[in-house]
Image 1 (tube, rainbow, N blue to C red):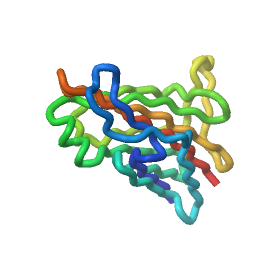
Image 2 (cartoon, one colour):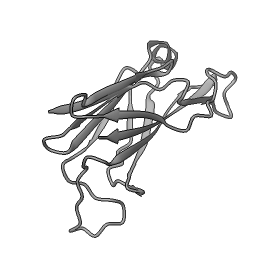
Image 3 (cartoon, rainbow, N blue to C red):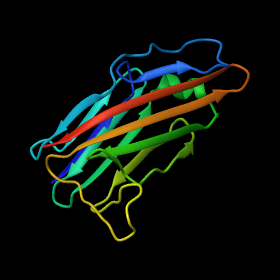
Amino acid sequence: MTIFCLMFIGPPAFARVGPRGVRSTGPESSTNFIYRELRRQAPFTYDSSYVGLFHVQYNYANSTMQWGFGIAKQWQTEAGANPVDFEYHIYTRGKEVNNYRPHSEPASYLFHSSIGSTFQFKGDAPWTYHSLRVGDTVDIISKFTYTVPGVLQHDFWANYRIGIR
């Protein structure tokens, strides 16, 4: 069985305009994480917000997790042809997973990543591997940034906590 969760970044996520920005495009939230729980009967979930859509899926058969972010049409329009930089960090069991892969893509791109059936934590010995399992909680901390030259810099943060139950 495969679980997939899609979440968009919205009010529980964070948005602000950078120091060169001339206007604010969204409120900041005091919510640190949006929690979503995955179960064998419901291995996929998503979150939709004013920033976009986030989805996540967990595959119980092979202990893998995939996720993706799509930016809302209004922000795609605002970004225009300017690239969107996507950064993220993944944590589980109190450690950062060593799979950080920044992307710089058009705003219409479905930003995505995954944790395979085996992974390493940052700082692990090269021969050390781990697997996700039922009972784990995975934190996905992500940031999107685009700049409209001379007009604004727009940053979004999305913090999701995924419970594998």
